[in-house]
Length: 314
Image (cartoon, rainbow, N blue to C red; front, top):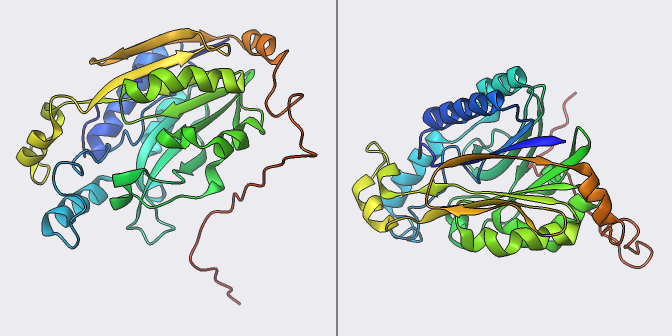
C-alpha cells in the first residue's frame, strides 16, 4: 500500500520563500500521518500567472507587463542555485516522495526564461526529474517557454511506478502514452485549480491507463495577492471572486472515485493506493502491454534536453 497526501492549498502567491516554507510545513504535517507520497499543484511555487487575463497581458512592449514579469522571474525557482535544497532535506527526513509544481528560471536556458516544471523528488531527497511543460496553454505562452521531452520519465515508488504531467498536457494522448509505456500505474496530473479541469478528465485517465489518477489543484482568491506584488490592487480587481476553486481528487483504476473533487477550500486529505487494484483492472486491458500492437503503431520520444549550443573544448 502507498499512502498519498493530497494538499489543496492557496499558494503564497509570487513569493518563492513563502511558498517553499508552506511546502515544507505541509510535508511535516503529512509526515505525522505516515504519507509516502505528497503532490502539489501546477506552478505552486511561486504561483500561476493569474494576472494575465485581466491586466492586458498580451500588450506588446508594455511597461506594466514587463514589471510584473520581472517580479515573477525574480520569485521563480532556480534549481541550480539550491532553491529546493530545504524541500529535499524535509522529504529525506520524512522518507517521503514528492511531485512539486514550480515556475523554473532555468539556468541552462539563459537564466531568464521561465518554464512550468513538475519536479519529482524521491524519498531520499534527491531530485530525479524536472519535467518542463511541453506546450504552455493559450495566455501562458506570454510568460512560459515551451519545454522538452527530458522529463517524460517514470519513477519506482514501492510497488508502484509514478509519472506526472502539467495541466493540459494531460490531454496530450502521446505524452500519456510515453508514460504508460514506461510502466506508469500512478498518474499525477497537476492543475492551477478548477473542478472543470479535474472532474471529468480524472476518471477518464484512470480508466484509460487502468491506473490510479491523482489530480492536484490550488485555490486562489483576491486576498491571496500580496501587497508587495506590482499592480496588486489592479490584479485583485481583475481576479474576480475565486479564479481557482480547487477540484483536487483521486480516481481508482476502474474510474470510480477514491477521493472525489472538493472546491472552495484549502484541505489536506489522505488515501491509500492498493497495487492489487491495478492488477485486477489490467487483466482485461493494458494499454501498452497485452492490449497494444507495437508491430503496427509505435511511438518515438525525444528525451534530449533542449539547448541552444553545444561547446567543444580542448
